[in-house]
Image (cartoon, rainbow, N blue to C red; front, side):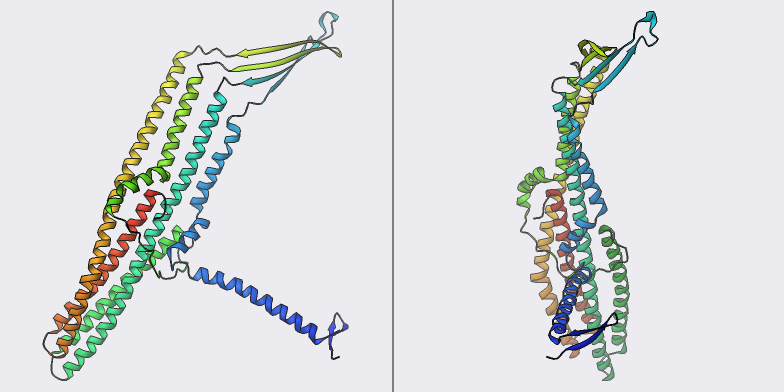
Length: 434
């Protein structure tokens, strides 16, 4: 059998080719696995920005603002364990006659005391802590809803800018071809040189617009990176697609309002604040009744325990003026919480109706542009181009047709983005994706 001689640490080793081949295959498989893991990670990083869902998934994990709100909610939840707990007991040790006056040995008294709140106060404290925990959790949800809406809106504007940049490049290419047509007709003495010059001026204007769009694009990339807690100059892929739009209409306002009342995190936070204020008011009212202190005591004389006793102590709620002021304060806080919740609900529902109307208008505008304006503009441009080549229309008419179709394309893109911006606001108010 053939073998292969190797030197390992100065010693000769004999390896069979089959063994070497097996180790080589394992090493190659390990390298491929590593590449298979690293490849998708690099692809995921490079594809960040291609769709809005990838941005949202990234922000959910990386956002420090969201992490802080979640930790606040967790801290509030942890307070539930201590809210209704009893206070620590107190041990008191007293030594009497330490100078042995009258030749009598001194004595030592041991007293163990436990404070006890009045009836029902522990449950009310737990209720207040539970309401505060719900409020903190709702605030975390509101932070995520707000961050989600901002990312969706920034992505839609990013999509619009990249789309306008693409349309402008297409127009630039078209104007370059139109310049060639004008140059050819000018060389044949069919048109004036002014046509070629105007085509060049249009190209210069397009290049200037591309500079502005590139600047706007970089600003939106920096804005998105800031929302994602990334370096402002970190690369982002160009957006590829917008989310499918749901079939919403102004007639859905009532059902969306009900969903918002039930799920909007801001409203849930305000409702939890009302509950906390109510429980705090009930806890203030319970201070009309005394708290207790019970204890056990024993007296040691020498080495013997000679006396045993029990004790009960309670506070007497006689300071009625201070207590009544605290009760009025608590009642006012309940009223303020209710009014604040009502104000937030009115504001959100008003925004919901406005955004729903704007969403419906943007959808109808997109349909109009898509089905009528764009086909008409395309037909006008084709007709103007054919007529210019035969000398039936001048170059100004051709430019007008080109500008009209470009405006129609940009209006369609604007309507699409406006619908997604309004959808993001509606979803923020409703408290869930639609």
